[in-house]
Image 1: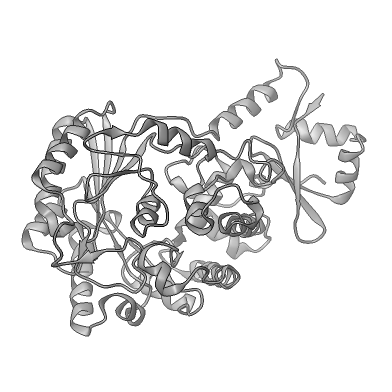
Image 2: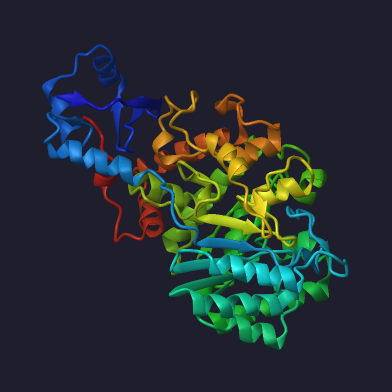
Length: 469
């Protein structure tokens, strides 16, 4: 019988976590490791490995087909371009401390699409082969160019069989026309709320009157659009974070059920104001405290909450095929199903690539509306998007669930070939995956309740987490 190669990593209580290349996993002790590396597996070991899909007797064995299917499901394939981020303006009516896009002042000139660029955007959309599209309007503050939003949405509704729109807005000034635009069922709102009114006012609105206006607009959005069409993301300074329970209570009071906890992004104006590293260790300590507090909250809450990224990681571990969120896709192809078109018509492979190019760190543009995609540059960027060939990833226990982030590496270090384990992306996700498996193997009923909520399953089951006796 053939046993698929296993990677292993220490867990608590003298246990080790073992994973295979298809993402199958189990826990076992050091005695099993000794047998595995010395080619001394027992019949009971082989029976367990075969039963859980880690071994197969012949190519006709269903375990072989199952392993191949699971491995394939974890691969992010090339796909038709169907997710477009559009930046009709870089102008904004706020001056947030942690601005990552290097926004322009509201009165600035030359930071909007002109009519020719709008026509080119529509021509570009018309040339797409997909029948389904998602358009995310970024900025700046995209509602400053509601006319462009209306033109794009109207076109997409006639061009594509299905379409979805997300407006990323600060909800500071929303005209009656904008409320009418946002009211349609295919349109969603994404905004920022930094967990507490005090922190949000300190970092974003700066002013009591402006903050009250945001609060009123957010309440109206929740009331008229509904919680399923409104999302809010907090941005946290790990060196001066808010109390986790205050953030959780703040989101719950707004009627939200999902929190995407983010530390300040090392991009744009935030890069200059907050420096190179806002202490990864401090962030990991805070994140753990936050999740522990969230688990306690969910134990008694009528409407439990999730932390989006942890939920996403748990789904990738247990199910595979969750590639909608681009940070962990593998390979993380650039210019395939996802593209950014900036205010000046320039193409970027990701929103972060747009940000790092804006500050002059490195030019990661991949073409423009006039000339189309730069295939040569795109091919060069796509040489470093898979962890299959990365020498530091090949032995990692978490490789099946993880991916590379070359844009972040370029932003921080100016290169993508530094040892993987020293990168911020790798250190961050090693901590996250360690924590995720710690929770999955926890005996705490409170943890089990939250995991069931986060995975959208009726109840937690020990069958989710195999253990070799």
